[in-house]
Length: 255
Picture 1 (cartoon, helix red, strand yellow):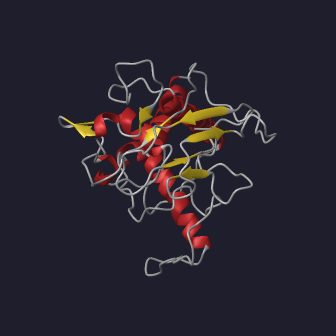
Picture 2 (tube, rainbow, N blue to C red):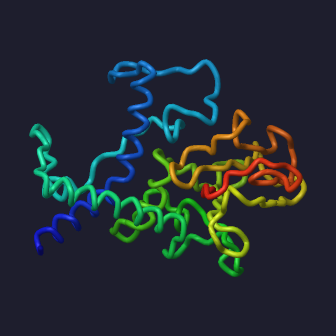
Picture 3 (cartoon, helix red, strand yellow):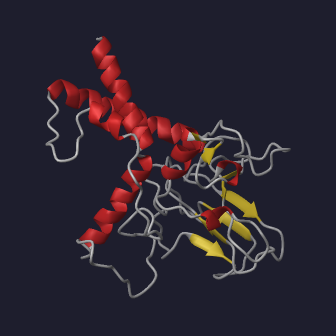
């Protein structure tokens, strides 16, 4: 019983420590299915990918380095050796994977770590992708495990420019997992987001809707579930369909 608990905890830790590698593996699988199935092959697309991409996050070329290989080895995953867990271990690892997935989801959609709130002096639910604008997730010689899981559960690649908010440089990301009353966003409901007129950006702003369970862009009748300054220029956006329309996705979480 004690060893069952130990192996389950190790499996859970491996999942949380390697969420980034898991996300990047889907990128590699998607590119491989498009023909880029060797290190010397590159996939080039004729046009911008739509909301049904081959990969979860298409805008990356950076591979994650595995960390915690000692912990991975503790559950039987060792380079150059076959991974052959017995029936008992398979059950424990399946349970650990489910726990890891649920834990990652909770850490991402209802974060409790510091430095996430975009408007810390208000009751706003808007949060940033990077705690305290830190894209390396490291501070004072330690790794911010919660911040790393929070980002990597939703995305695959990261660059310092993604958290640079200096004028005419970098970019910034705001994420809304909860509505104004704080329950999770529900595809069966209609929401309105109003932006100030003439949003102060150098290149563009955009609002994109993602599926909370699978994390790719939400599948809709539109090519992209996105509106912004390069599409319509609107500043009043209806999510889940305008009140006068019938499109709904009940029980589908969104952000």
